[in-house]
Length: 125
Image 1 (cartoon, helix red, strand yellow):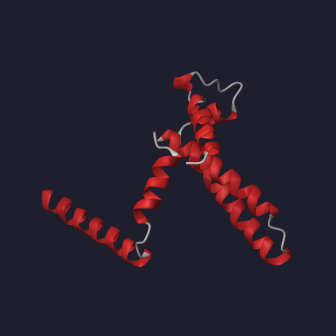
Image 2 (tube, helix red, strand yellow; image 1 turned 180 degrees about the horizontal axis):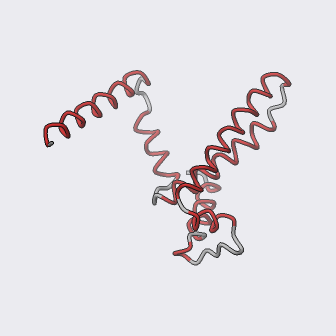
Image 3 (cartoon, one colour; image 1 turned 30 degrees about the horizontal axis):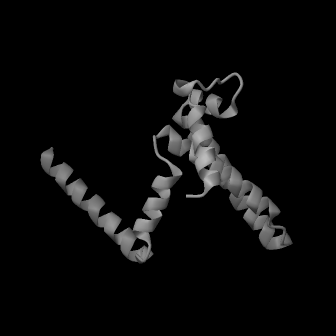
């Protein structure tokens, strides 16, 4: 994993209130203190801004805003990962697991597992 991602993940982890993060002095600690919904709302905002920047870049050719917004999206996604005790390394491992898999096959496999789980759950009712 990139050293930058490792350092950033460590800083984000240190901002959790349980680890001494102070919502009065830290934006990240404030997001953690507000909880899941605030973090998820912020990710939604950043995802929308990333999409809009990409649409603008398609017209004007200026990709600098795409880069800026994507960095914001990654940053807030890392906060979400930390909220759920996951790391960027976990994401990289999942991507490595999927490497070489057809996206269509992988999606079909997920649907099959979900369908089997639903059938199992219905049988328990």
